[in-house]
Image 1: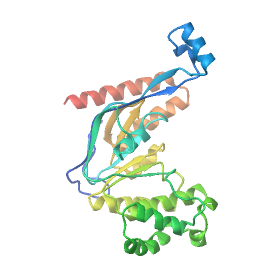
Image 2: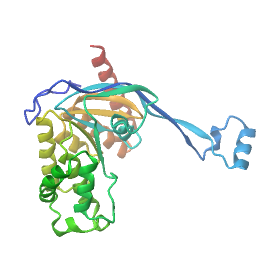
Image 3: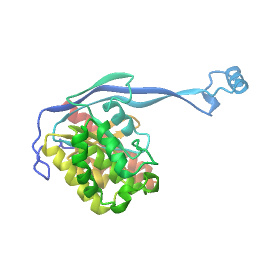
Image 4: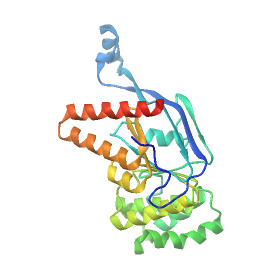
Length: 287
């Protein structure tokens, strides 16, 4: 796996370090309905009588380390439960790691499809609240509202309650609010997945604009092609471990091939591809 290219397709120049993730571990206990986790038969009976489920330890992230420069767009790929969203939450400061730490030059802004907006308020009112919550002054907020309205292209729906919106319309509004503040570090968790092709193109240009201003982007997506098209670098997470870190094109294509093999039941081929990728990535780290 080759290192991520400094010269990306839009000729964005990279700056100094923006985010450093150092030996990050996230472990937590969750209840399970599988009583075989109990240490003894007596414990199993006791738990059932008391209505207490056994707890299991989940390693959401296992000793993950990487560094990101300003101007980079980093995609995170991996199956559900691989640790992608947990990684973004820790970088954003919304979740405390078990060990390790994250250093960032600016406060990261996390944008997700479930980002909190008020359903019974209109898009227009949510834009006001969102921009103010992100630190824009009332004057700055009033100035960007027309820009956001033009960007999202919701027509009269911009003034209707958000609980009348489709998921794609809500996604547009969340993205527009998050980027209105021109964040130095923007974390996007599947927020573009519900957008149409036209909005995706506008979002890509908005992301490039932020990066040209020395911003840093993280994008989580199940669509490897989206990562390949919108990012300069990609990190593959699998069961909380970092499998690969390199150019978006190479990592995304390797992940897409592996996921296809899994979907087709070609488990031996998938296992070999995963092992080969891990070996190659490990050797690169030793160089």
